[in-house]
Image 1 (tube, rainbow, N blue to C red):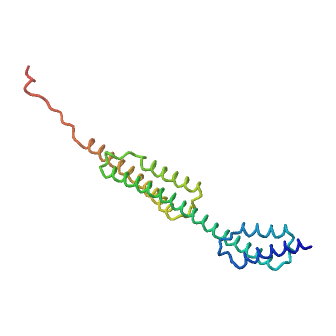
Image 2: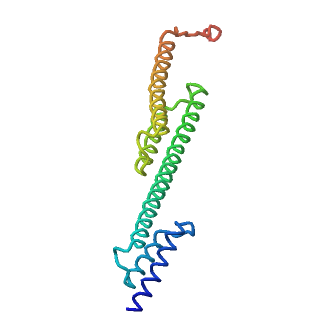
Image 3: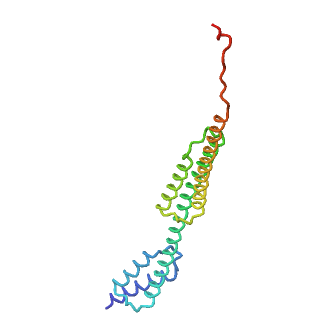
Length: 189
């Protein structure tokens, strides 16, 4: 009975120190759980006020730790998604600039369907980012999709332009009178 009293006193002192420190000594959840488990092993009654206070402190630390970890995970996910979407947008803008520069060189540099291929590649990049968890409503993914749409529409306009140019060329060749030259100098020979 004397040993039980000493054990209870010792456990009570440890628990009271944990309460007094209020965690200022860096007691984390696991440390507090270890103190609680140790106190129970030496026979501290579950109704002990100090034990109850330390259990409450431990649970509060656990909740705070979980909240902080959740915020860290959410921030990391948001940063990863922002990075993925920004990369998709960067590539889409680069491909759009390259396509526009090529088309600006003139009609003879236009390759029909090439812009549609670029639009398809942009859409593939968007789908890859979505598959990696980036939300479809991410602003950068929306901008990249708008670029894909614009590039595809430009391809349609270029197809029309090339077709119109071919029609004009055919009309010019049909409308041109055929000139037959007869060499009169060699006709007498």
